[in-house]
Image (cartoon, rainbow, N blue to C red):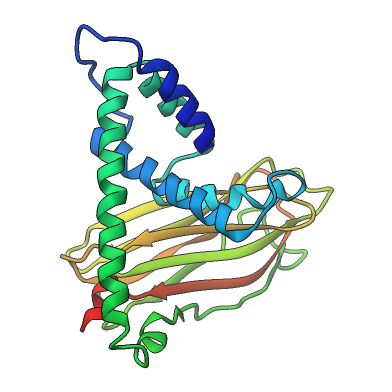
Length: 263
């Protein structure tokens, strides 16, 4: 993916634009695009450092990029469309690319500073960095739950959040569809509910697999508001269709914000 971006950028930088284009409203703006591409570069670095050979092991690599796209609430198709638009406007894309370099440089400097501080706090970091699993329901479901169940089985959940400030919440489960299942698609829905009655709703498509596939979604809690609960649907689907699926290893992990490491 990164090699493709670099190639396209190199090709289009030789062109000139007479007017500054306006980014479509539904696309990430220049700052957001720079942050997205910076995250893609970091994912590329993780792949290279993992030792994966870009060949037979490529089936594992998309997971790195999927994490980045989930973070920015984008599908691969949406990402490809956005990149195509930016590369069609090389002057704007060059400005975005310059911002990417600045972001990566700042992150590198911040990392060096954080590592220096960690040397003095090595004993407390493992406890602070450990994820907490907040899931309080069943971890295994087999749909339909019984022969008498209707087709509207979406498995709602509510997790009360107590005394946690900021941080990232990540829900995930393994979904295994039966071969005779006629359901075309399904979604995992997470709703962040705040004390001021505002709500953030985010969906993630569940890939239909007969061997089992991980469905996941992450959410960064707002630091200026009090989060009171994480709600949602573990399996949102077209209720007019039959859903035969096994759901295993349900988790709702909480990772404290980076500020917690410096307290």
